[in-house]
Image 1 (cartoon, rainbow, N blue to C red):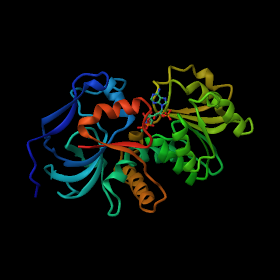
Image 2 (image 1 turned 180 degrees about the horizontal axis):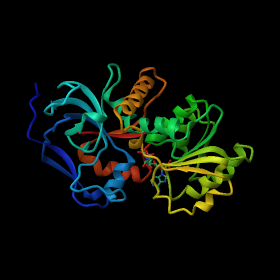
Image 3 (image 1 turned 90 degrees about the vertical axis):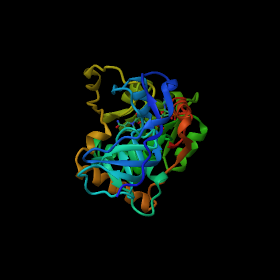
Image 4 (image 1 turned 45 degrees about the vertical axis):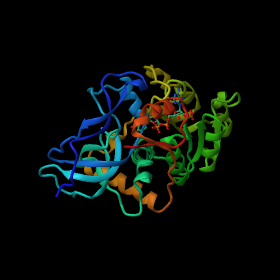
Length: 332
Ligand code: NDP
């Protein structure tokens, strides 16, 4: 039995790419109808990720008009024809697009039931970001106990979780972050070395990384900052080391001559979460692991702030202005 669902809803729509001003708040946008294999979810809370800004600016192309927002948590309000495995009333978290709205029609393929004892808010503070961190630390480069790891933007939505996961895996973590408050947060998570890469001393973070590793460099760099850090990351990695470039917070890594990798026999990867969770088996394996870590208290979440839907432009400004610590969330 379906819940009573209105015909219109609040939603934020992007009609053309641009700055935060292209995020248009609408109060009577049509509620989508779930198709076969889909669920209609009434979102209680949605995650805001840096990737949303790439779809807004057009760095990542996607058809417009588009409702941004790659993840949400809430209650199943209706089930599409022939859709199995979920019922109206189930509390779920999903990965798809359209989270900046009260309702989203999503495929069941990347929807998970949230276990009892885990809040929607904790789930959204760790769902897309936490799955990313697990996949990149286990598959892109399998982190080993004792590895030295350099992690940029360690106080961010993904970075806050990654610092903790790397420590539970037994790595030595060197975290970078902008400003004293962010650095104190990263330190509190157990990072071994924390560098404020915006400070005078921290600007030469490559030198600090080299010193911390006895001149050798790190086994792996996780770099989501991109344009501003890629060259330093290449210097900071050890001979036979790995660089995982996975984001463009400062702009994309420019086209790179492969010969740059040769002197140190460096391996590079440019992964995407979605490449690791395409089968139901892969998706469930990572979501179960994440829920397990949340339930046991091994993984702590940090919500920067919960913003009302109509303040979405401010969230994008805060993210791009490097003002957030942990994860910004949206209350549709
Ligand atoms: P964050 O909360 O980490 O926000 C981005 C952070 O990047 C900022 O807070 C800032 O931290 C740092 N930064 C450095 N330089 C700049 C700059 N010039 N402008 C803005 N920010 C800058 O975002 P998310 O946790 O949502 O995502 C983190 C990164 O991971 C993003 O690059 C994202 O695209 C990527 N990502 C990639 C995925 C994939 O599948 N490939 C999946 C998930 C995330 P500070 O002030 O400390 O420098």
